[in-house]
Image (cartoon, rainbow over all chains, first blue to last red; front, side, top):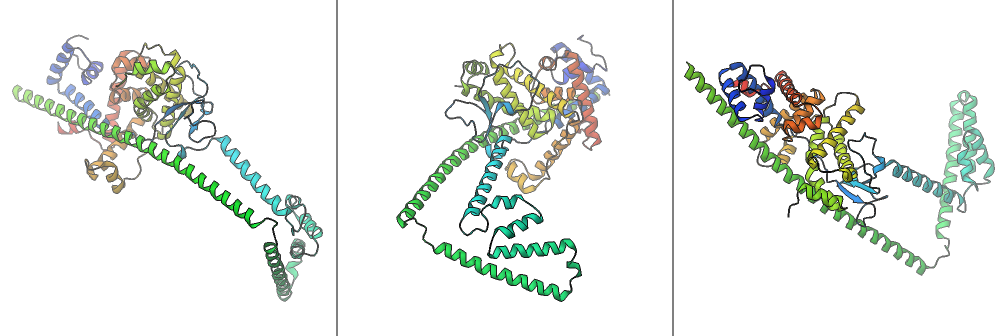
Length: 311
Length: 195
């Protein structure tokens, strides 16, 4: 750049603004700006935009990333939470040539806030489904159950299913309920219900209620019988089992507590670092703003001085 | 003892994960701030930040130290931001600051700043953020690298892969448009008003 500054040389003005030009150029522009009101205003406007920019701070985010090796004993890998496998990141065109280090992953500080990976969610769903299925089978196969094939009853839907329940179970209360429902359902489906008189309907409802009551009483009696029946396990064995369960639960809780404590300590550390960084940034901002203000004042004074001298 | 970036890079290349973690600790905030200011979305900025270090770690064997480690990181982050924007295929949306709750703000701000000042600063910050989101990506990136990361014109030119004069033009145009946008939104530059 020449030592003479021309109005409209925006590149030079920007260099002057950021104090990134040679000292001779700096002086030339400074002299010009002191005389040219338009350029002085332009410069002042650019500076004020910069002052506003200083107020823009990004929101605080929990970062605390760490690289952890797959074979590192202290690492959280595999199914442990918080670890994000590399392969699952969305495809990004490389800014640099990748030299792959397999088994390395980047973990973040707050694992419980991150969503589970899809495979983990699917596994959990499968586990839940299997547990539900198992429970259903166990309940269905317990003595006193109304059907020996509970799943087949569940699987079939519609009028045939209710008919199957009604015929498979003999002489129990639930049979009555099922057959009553069947009757009611078939009546509804054929449109007969709409033709029944209110008195008849009431009588039918009362009959239904009585059946429900009887079924309930029978069910209670069966449950009481089942509870009072000897289980075949001695009291000592039962106690030992309960103790074992209690110990197991206690150990689990202790493990959980240790895990949580470690996590809290880690979070505390990362938060402290965030706070320190924030304080440092705030100080820097205050410093920058003050500097900019002082610079503005100085320029204003210079400008006023020059204007008064000219007059 | 405080290690330099170059020392830590050398140790990381030798397989010392802790050294690389030190580098992450040192640079994750600036990289996150850069990504956030360029793409304008908190969660995505966090992802970009994470990807940047992941990519840097993978590519560490190929890093010859011709450029500063920080410049290299910014280069990766900038490429990832560009990819992100390409994927979005739309202007970046700006996450506005949530409604200013005086109690919350007071708790965050501490005793240094009054609630009024804090609210005002938040307000200005949101306005600037909105205005910056309206700038073209090249101008926004140039301003962010210059204003918040203190890079020289030459460094920005290298990062953006353009001539020095283009960087200056981008900065000038960006600042000018920003000033107009701020004026339009009622943030009349203080110095102009005083004159």
